[in-house]
Length: 181
Length: 391
Image (cartoon, each protein chain N blue to C red):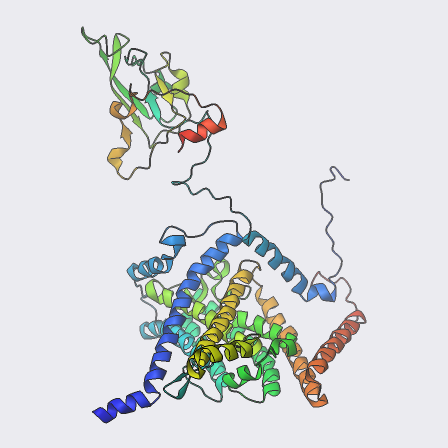
């Protein structure tokens, strides 16, 4: 019974003398390998060249500020709850008088840490955040660690720099390639 | 003292010593860069780039490898025979290095009115010497594998020994056909007889085929690398080896490749001869004078020799990354039932062609006749019932 016509009929007839001499198939094989030898290689030499990852790539985390430069995060902990790898931890603190220009909400994260060895870059924190505070950048990798003390990223590495604000733009391939230069 | 200096400069001693050292250095250099080339060729055939971090294009990779080898722990198993365990890789390396001593890499240099051959030693039994040394090479593998006191190593060593013995027969017989044509055992003489595009490959196509297959087997290269197959024997005879002892085994393989490419080039591809070399030499002599012209022409000849050798090494690698490993019974069948009868037939055909007086035509007619006879015999052979495929 034939279900599909994808099955390939094998030739089980006895080999001829010419075929048994092994030379014709050897020559064919050598032809194939030498063809590959001269083919263009698809390798992307990573640190020097970078692959186009698309505008929806999830890379380095960022804690956004609003237009006035105030941190958006209110330390609700929803990202930590959402995180399947349990990579996020934080310590909340109440905003005191005179800090209104620093924090948008009345409660803020005094400590916000992401363990980059645990993080799987799934983006669930980004989805859970009710304040649009945490994002995964599409233009920056988390670099390679060489020391255990480099693994946990604190607020100093995560909070947005007002001089270089992050925006998820570059929706065309050409624009996105420019970011990776 | 002054007479000693005079003796040194007048005798061949200094020049010979220089040539031996240079050939030794070139052998080691080519073998070292063969390891790099092997990775590159493998990578390119598999659509990769290969090592390219150490130095430009990975050119410092052999140094990095050697450094790694030296800093590995040099381990000798407690149950191994210590001295034989050390002797194995030494012997392997030693025989590999010796075999290129009689290979003429070029014609000759005329220095101070003396003709110095570009060859470590010119002996009139060069081929015999090569065969003697190459067959000694298997002792290195055998001793190393046996002394390891490990059953996989021993199996690998036994495989190496039986494989080398089987293939040496066919190899020797394919060379006897060449010796019958040239009438000499001296490699230099064989090479100079191929002068003027008169290469042995045109006279001995079958002999070349047999010789090449056997050379692959003698060098333990794929498809005949059964002594060191990882899948069945966990690495074969060098399972227990580490550090530079392992390095010596691996390095000896590359030196053997170089030596067998050199011998193949000498026996079948005219060694340092190249088409139009007389014209080039005449031009150089008329332009630069007799001595300098001759020396420069010799350099060009050395270039042609090394081109052939390097292509030979590339061919070794090309085949390695194309053909899968043989099964052991297939290997033995090919050796004993395929190559040895063919080599004998080749001998008979060559002898007949030499006697008939028409060497070139005679050999090709003889080979055609042999092919016809074999195919007739094949077509009228009694068919087995329920023949298993390929059995």
